[in-house]
Length: 212
Image (cartoon, rainbow, N blue to C red):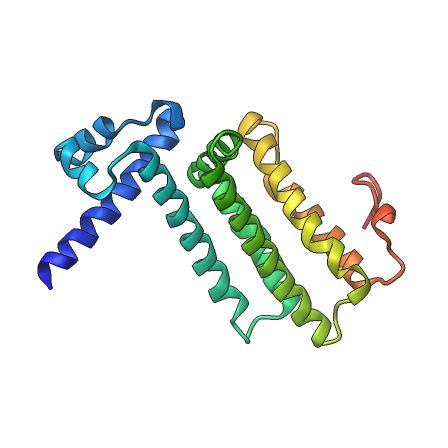
């Protein structure tokens, strides 16, 4: 049992260290040797768990999927938080991720890699499918409780993902001039207006210079 635990701990350390190296050097600069040197182990030991760099990259994506899902699932299942509050907390969770940059920079690298790697492409589809599923659970809860309008539900989940994806790209490229908190305040107001008001169609979303 201790040996199995040690093996799991080392495997987890390799995955965490790989994320650090990808964040600092991007996928193109990530090597098994760099990871081994940082952990002060031999490259052969890294390859015992992950025989190739590609295997390691795929495992990192799986690790990120588990991480994102576990945190959001806990929030979604909390019956003490209203659907509106859950939507707000989901948005501000993204502010934390984007500000920290590590996970978001890694995901951007995987987006690029997915154009040539079919396995990563499929894993990225899984990330977005899970993300949309979690959004829809919160929206459906609001519908069931009578606080959200079902007519706009299909749009809101997609818009939420698009707003966040756009924020990631803008902030990473312009961190000094892109106010994340102000941006997500506006996103939250727009989404609530869509969900609460059955007369606001997608083309009727207010512009940012219009008072909400």
